[in-house]
Length: 390
Image (cartoon, rainbow, N blue to C red; front, top):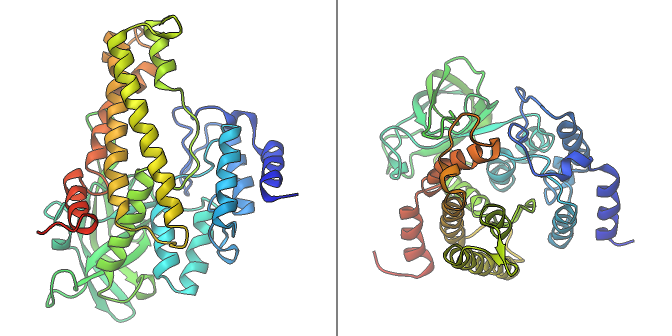
């Protein structure tokens, strides 16, 4: 029996029926010590997949991963999509810090941290941006001063997604103020329960508090939590951003099938001769679908061309830029299709899904900022991909 057939049989026997439905509000699984599972099947599905290492299918088995080849991983993705299986685990651990530790961490660091990511034991957040260091990230001022076998960290980070629910943070800090701003940065990780860490949620226009400001007051971090060499933080940090942008752009992971815009539009305006009833709306949906299909084919082509390259390239900026623009465009279309029902915020006059779509439309605007703004991505594309002069 080939791998694909084996995976198909295993998924059929082990994926709970409720995990083959669209993810409902509150059932998004990102793990962690504070995780609450509204649906018990979510935890069951996570545990079963983690036991096989299939929450991180291509990571080495010695670090808790599945040890799959790229071809086997693609087969697993296809079979999961075939039964519309939910992703068993999501979050920064799998898409950002885990790959960075694999690339830059020591064997001991991989053994210590990666299995706890694979199992969903820990939830991670990102400490990059600061109140006065956003797009100019290299100007960050959070300091880490050596003190024996530890660093003492002082400063603050902003827009730390999910910091109030996270167990650990990966953080860029300044360890040497006497060299160039890029060379003086290091990359460290530490437990959010460490004394001196405090968190303030930031409420968004969508009504949620996903983002936070995080403060560090004499936080003591063991030197063994330094990833890479001291002063190598900019190199590690840039690579991690490429992993993040690839993830935001939709590259490389299993994604559930969702209702198409055609189906969604027809549910509101009906069909005429088998087509969306409103001709203007039909044209907009068709245009989106054509662009989305071209984008998907481009991702597949890039994956084939990079078959022997484990790490992402500057092409991740292209996928991040276009993928987030497409997501915002889709959200705009969804709200437009809903008409006046797209104005719902609360009350009995709106279905829960309609209210969620409205809030999702507002939330989608952050896509053009998170992971590096669209303007930053355009600069990277111009310089690194097109070779244009500064």
